Image (cartoon, rainbow, N blue to C red):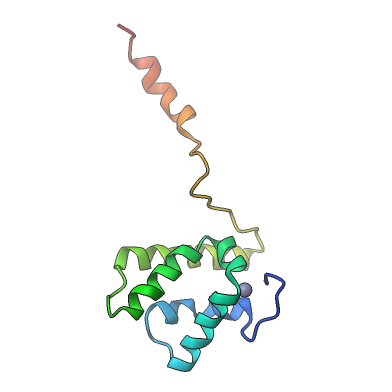
Amino acid sequence: MSCGGPHATDCGEVLDHLYEFLDNEMAEGDCAKLREHFDECSPCLEKYGLEQAIKALIKRSCGCDDAPSDLRSKVLARIDSIRAGQRGGEPVVELDPAAPVHGDAGVLTASQTATPAE
Ligand SMILES: [Zn+2]
């Protein structure tokens, strides 16, 4: 698990400690290590779709403003799914916010047939 670049902190290690980081339960030294990694290793965060959320959280926590709990729980849920995928050896499903949403076509069929055109 790596973006290919050399880092003082391993990408997997960062993921392991993201919970503590987001909960502000890390020692300041470890905290700095993670921030450093985010700065130099945006490719791996981008891959997880976590970059935006984490940068936003970092900014807010640096600005004496509590991170919004819904954003944080979204990130934590995302980390959960990433780690679950890693455990199972399955590829991480890409969540591209810019991608069109599929799945409506099949779901809508029932209501479409039940609604007569006027
Ligand atoms: Zn990385």
